[in-house]
Amino acid sequence: MSVSEDREDVAPAVHPAAAAASVADPGPLGLAAFALTTFLLSIVNARWTVGNSAGTAFLGYALAYGGIAQLLAGMWEFRNRNVFGATAFSSYGAFWIGLFVWIRTAPAVTGHDLGWILVAFAIFNLYMLLMATQVNMAVFAVFLTLQLTEIFLAIGNFTSSPGWTQFGGYIGILTALVAWYTSMAGVANGLNGKIRIPVGKPLI
Image (cartoon, rainbow, N blue to C red; front, side, top):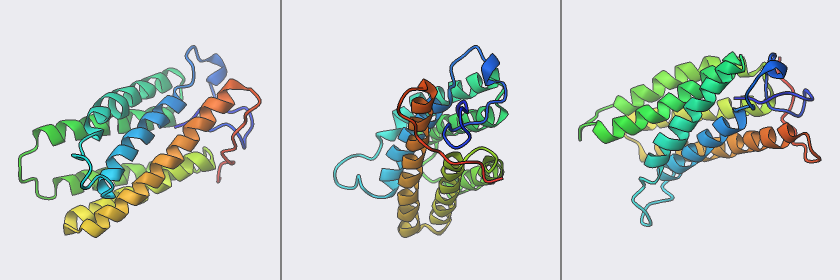
């Protein structure tokens, strides 16, 4: 999840081959798609939609934006030879597509299926979090807040606890805001204009 780096403390990305790339940096698109879909699902988990909506607004966007658009961003990252961005965007694009299909096709009684899905992605996210320490603080913060979101939602699913799920929803909202910030930084810094948005240096 990254974009081309002009200054080490400003642009959110690691792109060693960016100068030779034939496509624009897809990082801001992937982050924006991830942020919006995460936000829509997280407000459901946080119970902000109780009494005022069906809580299914995220489904179409899980497929079209968080899923397909983010998967495309991952494919373009492969073209840009950015293995980190390609792996992250492709995996979470597939996550949203898979979640859409699972919700649409799952039987009425699913047991702890969603909990195991979250555990599996928390394992994946953990080593991506470790690798994000080499990108910048903004990208690291995206993976850190997402790690916490997945853990709390998994606990909520396994314990059937609305409280844990609601707390995971609040952390998910924070994750979306951090991802939007990082996407905005990618757009602003990619323009090389007057507006520059800091993202911090790599942790290691």
